Length: 92
Length: 145
Image 1 (tube, chains in turn blue, red):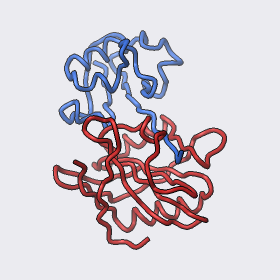
Image 2: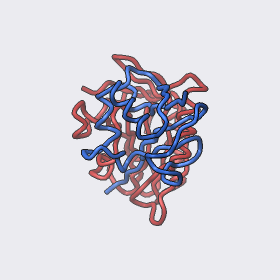
Image 3: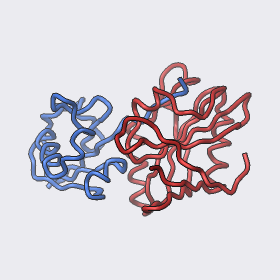
Image 4: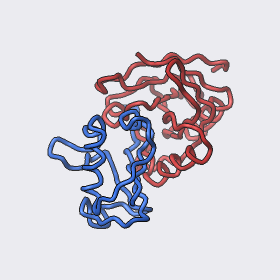
């Protein structure tokens, strides 16, 4: 089963679990499974149209899914998927 | 309501030095420690590269690779990634609209105001429960600016 790493700021929506294991075969299915299990995390991951929010990046191992097949990227049993929030800001 | 937040002198020194060294650019880094239902304790500040391309005097950005390393570090060290610090050169330690737009729940956003190369103020902010605005956290500190 693939393993999703939940970023610390979203763990309050996943019952404080740092990881989520899934037998989904694509990123899209894995995110859907996660948000079905923990509905409160959904608005922080997906926009109104159900796509991954622009401020969230998803990596399989060290690879950004945008350089793979996006949300249709296939998952293998040993894959570790990181959900990475954009961290940015500035004075004005 | 936001929790009181304690910042260790060591963490403060790391942030202050980093912010002053990089003046007039913004600096940034991660904050680690522990928290519970009644308080939050920042024990360690770790600088990271401001990955923003172009002018860094009013913007900071942390790369996804550095973010993933930070999460792994927290798991390995059995500590908690509690937030992010950054500096506001020649600007107050007030969280901006730009800070708000990209803020995550739960994280403390510590901001150091650096005026003419010297740290002038430090404040910490956290998103409110509705994630619609920042609430200032009360810093209880045993260090002097």
